[in-house]
Length: 365
Image 1: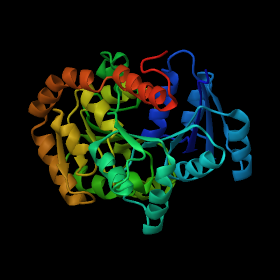
Image 2 (image 1 turned 180 degrees about the vertical axis):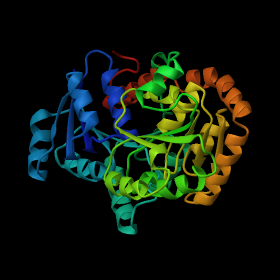
Image 3 (image 1 turned 30 degrees about the horizontal axis):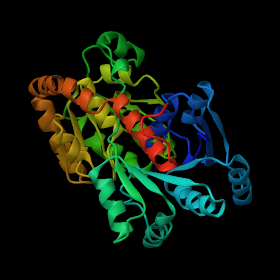
């Protein structure tokens, strides 16, 4: 029986979709042969996958990718991120791959009209789409129209609760050079306009002068890193904004934080907010995508209109002025959220989709 899955992704830099791919490959049931091809950039996720002995390599030119599909004969082609969706669907259909599965983990606010049309046109080439939120499902349903292909499977993000053991806050703060008595707001994001990283200087300028003990801890890499750092370097509070680059030790990062914040322009279902909630942190985030779904699940968060930085600062101020109560509320909600968004459940459901679409009985190892 063919259990080979070829995963095509646009790039392997840090991000929610890339992390999802890392999770499902490093927790794969036995018997599957996974290979990862990337179209543009290797990155931290590619290196992490290689450390787990997962094959990761560039896809090469379009003819080279087509040749790979014909030679490898995967049972499933699994695509992640926009360019990989479009190219993978078209070449997968031409190469007669038996099953093409798309993972839709964004709400595509960034797309130009022609990009949406191309996505809609190629969507029926997929046998199935895995979405991680109702917001993402609505996007696919709209593009699918009255057709019944592809089938849609909604699978919420998963959190590996075993990683989030108790970590001493003082030790965590020493790791990042933070004062022991600091008030710390942490965020993990790809430093890209899609995630609102260009809004960080404005957000910081509205809060750091008001709260003298407030420090921002920022984990992530991306194309805007240099320009953001240059803007902040000229401020009087530059020593209270800590850029730490890519962070593998998310539990330690969250243990060092008092609250979590996000400025994202779009989210389908933000993994970072799920992890912060499962750790017992309150948060502030924009009203976009599936953020409201996380609130409905019991998370202790405050929201503001997307891209409204004055409102973001106002909601953060309200949170900080009521932090003990909000922190207690977040800690009490954490156990139920860890269970609801368990990694084990997500992995099982994803492989049930792989098995179902490829004709293998559900639950097969």
